Image (cartoon, rainbow, N blue to C red; front, side):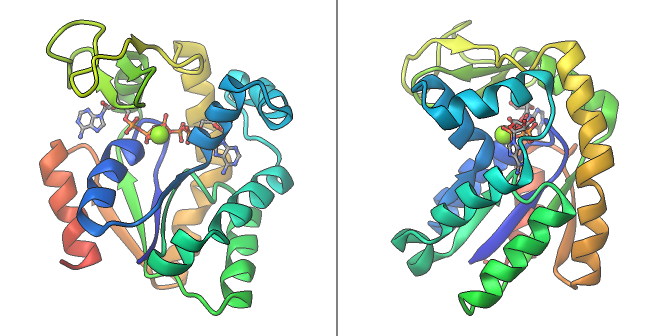
Length: 215
Ligand code: AP5
Ligand code: MG
C-alpha cells in the first residue's frame, strides 16, 4: 500500500496512522517525527529543523525531500509500501514525490484527506499531550490517559510539544492553509483523493479510512 495522510495540524494524522499501521502492516513515515527525533539526539539536521518548527514554519523543501526520499528507499518501503504522514506539504514536495515514484516504478494508491474545522484543531493542538518514551498521543479532555500525566501504554511521562502553544499552533494552521491546502486539489485532479471527516469519533473516522483503503 502506498498512501498519504493529508490534513491540517491536529487533524488526527498521527492518531489514525497508529491504527492504519496495525491493520495494514505498512511502514509509518512522519517527517515531523523524524525531525523531533533528530532534535532530541542533537544532530545537525535537528538543529536546522528546530528553528523552523518552533516558529510553526515549514522546514525548507529540499531538506525535507531528501530526508523523505532517503527513507522511502529503505527495504521495508520497497517490500510493504508506505504511509506518509506530514509529507508532502507543498506542491513542490508533491512534484518531487511524483518524480521519485515514477523513477522507482511506483504509484500512489490513495491520499486520505482528514477534514477538521479550525476551532476544533486549536482545541486539539493546545490540549495534546505526548508520551516521552513511546510517542503515544493523548488529549487532556478528548482522550485523557487513565492517570494524569502518565502514558497508559508504557507508563512514560506525558509532555506538551513545543509547537502546541496557542500562538505557534495558530501559525501552523495559517501555514497549512497557504502552503499545504492546495495539495487537496492537486490529488483530487490526480484522481486518488478520499475526503474523510476527521471530526467524527476516532473509530468512525478509522472506519471511513478503511472503507477508502479497502479491507
Ligand atoms: P508534524 O509533526 O507533522 O505536525 P502537524 O502536521 O502540525 O500535525 P500534528 O502532528 O500536530 O497533528 P496530527 O494530525 O498528527 O494530529 P494528532 O493525531 O496528533 O510537523 C511538525 C513540524 O515539522 C511542522 O510544523 C514543520 O515545521 C515540520 N515539518 C514536518 N513535515 C514537514 C514537511 N513535509 N515540510 C516542511 N516542514 C515539515 O491529534 C492531535 C490531537 O487531537 C491529539 O491530542 C489527539 O489525541 C486528538 N485527536 C485526534 N483524533 C481525534 C478525534 N477523532 N477526536 C478527538 N480528539 C482527537
Ligand atoms: Mg502528527
